Image (cartoon, rainbow, N blue to C red; front, top):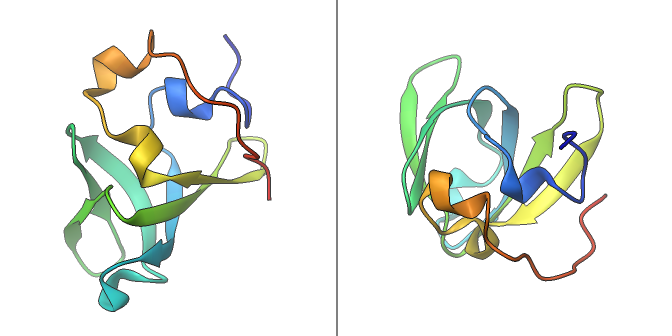
Length: 97
């Protein structure tokens, strides 16, 4: 399966560039960096200054795909163990910015 806006939520996210678009924590909005690890409920984000743990719940993220496309994904869609998300059925939403 190719990495594209429609299938992003079912792919490995480690290594992708990401920016926090919206969050219930105002201090996290605008943070950007590379995803270096992922758990069921969080991302470990490596920024230029430090490594941060960000909650997926109540946040939305803009991922930059290898081909340069930007894709917004709501964190609630990503709440799952990464290895189980591959087979999870995803609801149809508007992914592309």
